[in-house]
Image (cartoon, rainbow, N blue to C red; front, side, top):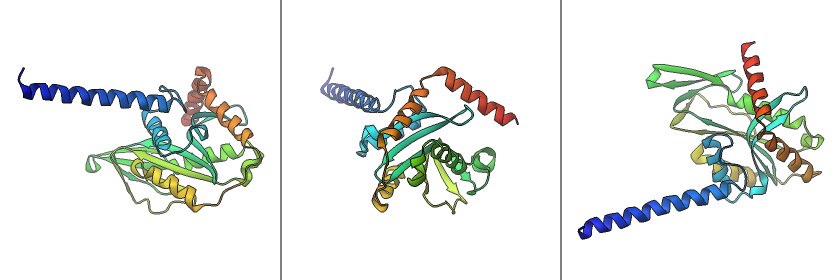
Length: 228
């Protein structure tokens, strides 16, 4: 083996070791919040972004199944409890152009320069419903600010999405941490009556996501509502 081949082999080996090391490191970091099989890959990437930006792992709750009045559940991608209030995340992954209005029930994904169009439920309305379900859980939530952050992963661009409600943020994944920092820096600290009550609620909802029975019941409920 000549010297150039040896150099290439050593360089490639070091590169491979670095990738494996980073993967192991990221997995250990992720597991301070959630398990590697929970939620979607993009949700887990968002968890890692938050952790690497300095958000304490004790304040991040992933893949929550919140029991509502009546016995059904709502699934919330990600929640962060902060000094200024509760940040509720809805994580999406789309390519192409994204069209939609604030109160429009369905938004549209356009691919292949208009040749393919797909509809999906308005994520602003979706996350607002999640926040309402959360507010119905605890009395102290009525006096705590909530922030809706909708994060789009993928090669997409927003079209005709000029108006977004107050305390709602619609961003690409590359700007997600910047938006979180803006929320933390531009709002006054809030008062929590009982932090332990909130933590217990979020931990219980995250634990519900380990139940196959709860997840199956949630999926069936979605299908039933979709049919009607």
